[in-house]
Image 1 (cartoon, rainbow, N blue to C red):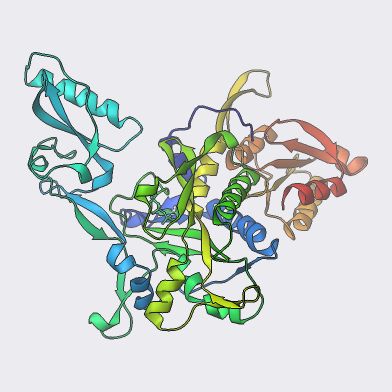
Image 2: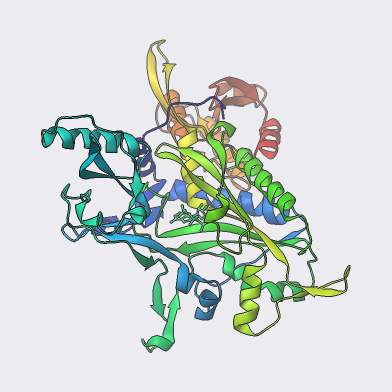
Length: 507
Ligand code: ATP
């Protein structure tokens, strides 16, 4: 994938491509959809599976110090008391009483409109790349509407969590444009509740997990007791998580059901946690690059010390430049030994391990890289999407849409195309190659339409290579044409070379 910054693709274009080519559909679309839930279509399911598989291979199978587990989605409710989620997994919520819309208070911005030192009103805007500009424009328009003379001061954006109680009735709702309908922010717990068993009383309340991490902590002793690990070591898992997000948005970036890939790396309490933290940040960044994300789209954000939870020593997010702004992709947190200590307290069972070096029992500390599969999925689509002007068969110019996905994650690795579908020898050879490739790789057989059009179809879904079986293949040395997606260059290649190429690039 080229590293030069390219113009960002619009979300409308991406969403349309995802639907058209069967990457992502709205969940329950035939009933009008359900906000914050998505389905992955045939190509999407492949791409997502490849992202998961690459992570699992690199994080678990190819490391000697990490083991993988799979824990249940519904756990004992005490888990979520111990972890602090029951009391504190909340977002600040603001209601608009007039429109019945709900907003996350930290994503709803407002500003006083100040003319010649006097406040003449308030304006509001939802968080976006251009929140300050939007507020400034709204302030200018309010001044004009009220026909106020004087000098308008530059607006100072604040979010609703910073609003003074007397300001709240004066701030207009983004839904109606009128003040008076917004409520003060209140805490909203994002865990989905359910009931386990036939009773639906307080004793049967359980939660869909809002993160996979607690599975690793709750099973810590089980993993240690199976005897395969010693400090430092990691426990990893991939699985669904659920959060009743107040404002799911930006397609699959923030949804209510999503998939996480998390790893808890346990270290000695005296270990150099900052060094280990740094090593994991680097590992995560390198891994993202290895599946095709351009380095130029990645950056780091260190959470300010004063905003960290009391037990946290440091959190760094790897940020990605999405079309809607630079946003968190992967959080890497140094969490001390808070989680294990809490489970020790709430379960009454020791969560310590015996340290051979110091002959002491210790509760290990942890570094936690936590990432969402869906956010990676969106990132690779955003970075890989391009529209190019290319030469058509007749020497004219035509537009091609191409998804420059890494061969590691591309849903289809190779398309096998017989040059002509009415020549049985070509078709038979192509089908034989297709069958052989299929044993190891996701491949696609396509005999319909002009060869140029077939290449374009594959470009649009990110297939790195097409092979065309032609008369030379059957009449001469068996070689066929290999066409590369990104360069569009073609060359003759033997079957063994094709397998060697795939072996090298698809890992
Ligand atoms: P945010 O601040 O964006 O809500 P977070 O800091 O709450 O995210 P974590 O609890 O650290 O997120 O979760 C770890 C990872 O899980 C995130 O970095 C992100 O990739 C993913 N993730 C979290 N919430 C969602 C969601 N609602 N939809 C999709 N992915 C999510």
